Length: 369
Length: 73
Image (cartoon, rainbow over all chains, first blue to last red; front, side, top):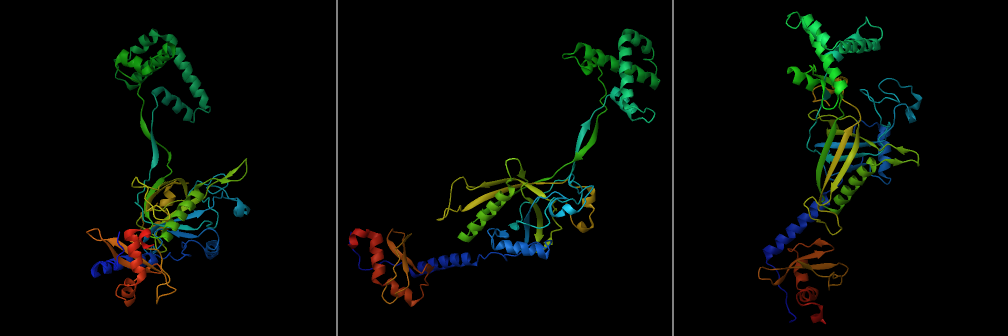
C-alpha cells in the first residue's frame, strides 16, 4: 500500500449536503427542549402545585412528557398519579363520612379514593386512539310458572311469611304427585275447556308432574325433556332480560415512542419506570401491603379539559406492556436506547359511571364520561 | 463512513479538537466528506475548513483509514 501525498475530497456539493444534513440533525436535537417543568394540571391548588414543584427537585420529576417538546396547548392526555386513600382515613380521618363516600363504601357518584394532593406528578402523552364504552350489565332471567307462583306468593302482602308460600307449594306438589294419574283424570276434564283458569290448573298439574318425574327418575330426564317427549311442550321459562348491575369501564392505550435524542430516550425511560413504580403494590410489612397508586386521566388542551372526548373517573393501572423491539428486531442507539418502543397501558375505573355523573352540570356541551 | 481520531494540536488551531470524516465515493475510493470541530460539524464555506483539509493531520488521517496504521510507521 502506498502512502498518498494528497487526499481525495468529495465534491463541493456533496460536502455541503453532508454539512446541511448533520447540522440540521444536531440543531433538531438541541431544539428538543423539555416542556415547562411546573406545567401541572389546573385542578391542582397552589399548595399542591408547590408540592409538585418541590418534588421536581427531588429524585422524581413532577412532570414527564413524551415527546419532550410536546406543546401543552395541543390536545394531549394527562395522567396524574395519586396516592390511594380510603375516605375517612388519613388526613380526612377527622371527617365523619357516610353514604356513598365513606370508609366502607367509596363506590357512589362523586366518591374519591385519592389523597388530597397529587404525590406523583403528571405524565403528558400525545392523544392516543380515543374510544369509550359505556353501558350496564344485563342478563337473561328465567322463571318457570311454579317458581313465579312461589315468588308471587312470597312478595304478596297477604302472606306475611315468604317461606310459607314455598312450603304451600311443596305441599301442593306432593299432593299432586300422590294423585298421579288420578289428578290427570280429574283435572283433565278441563283440558278441552277454553276457560283460562282451567287451562292454568291443567298446565300447572303437568308442570308439577314433570318436575316430580325429574326428581324421581333423575339422570338425563329433566322436566323439559319429559314434557317434550310426552307432549311436545316444555316448561315456559318466561325469559326476560333484566338489569344485573353497573360495569366498570376499562381503557387500553398504546403509544409508539421514538427517541430523537439521548435526552428524549432518558425521558421515555423515566415515564416507563414511573408507571411501573406507581402500578406496583407497596410493601408495608409481612402482614400488609398498601394499594398501588391510582391515576386520574384527562384529555386536555392547554389547561382545559376536552369536551370532545370522554372523561374518566379515577383509575387503577392494571397493566403496563412495553415492547422494546416493536419491529421484531432489537435496534438501538449507541447508548443502547431502543430506537423505538411501544408502550401499552391498561386502566380500569375504580367506580361505575352513574346517571348522576352524566347529569353533572360541568359536563354540559361535552360528551360526558 | 469512517471517522478519524481526534486531533487537538493542528498547527494554527491548537486547543481545538478536530475529527475528519470520510466516506467512499461511487467507485469505492475513500474521500473526505466533513470535518467536526469540538463535536459540531464544521461549515465547509469557512477558510478554516480549507486549511484543515490541506493539513498534515488530514493527510495522515486519510492514509491511516485507507491503508491502516502500519503504513504510517
